[in-house]
Length: 210
Image 1 (cartoon, one colour):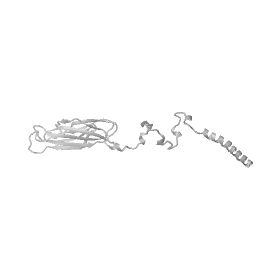
Image 2 (cartoon, rainbow, N blue to C red):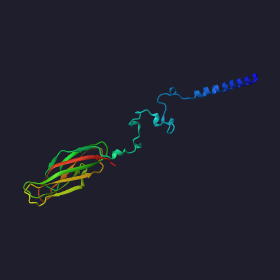
Image 3 (cartoon, helix red, strand yellow):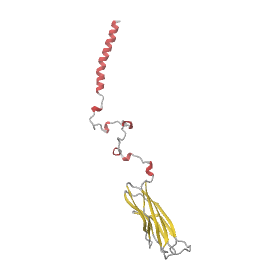
Image 4 (cartoon, helix red, strand yellow):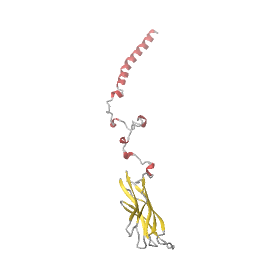
């Protein structure tokens, strides 16, 4: 029995002697935060997908850390954002040349299309019993001809300078670049009759460039 116990004891001692240096060596290979010089771990040292969201402290990733081209479109970016409206104006064109009746400026921080809505009240001038004219949306890049609408007095037996009619024009422009742009409602007068435009107003809303 003593011989058997001695053999077991010798085997245990041998195993401990053999494994002790191995464990110590393995422990010496472990990399701890104290072993790393600050700023020396580079992206090439990290395996793919080795750093996940759970390893990042809240608020530590800022806009400067994100590649903008890697981001998808935010769904609400398609909604209208910046909006402006002009003061009430008037105009009295005498020819076919368009003149601005009301304008407003809008400053874009990013390229955008513009939704422009203009309204005016057309009236016959004193001394005239009829009128004809056109109104349209005008911009710093030129007129939006598709928005043109026509207004004409009707023979209703009204007195001179008494006839009036409301007119609304609207358009969505092409993409405007970053910067300040002026938009408005422009009107003219044809050869028949004399017309004046009153209570002219314009509203503009910036839309997504997409």
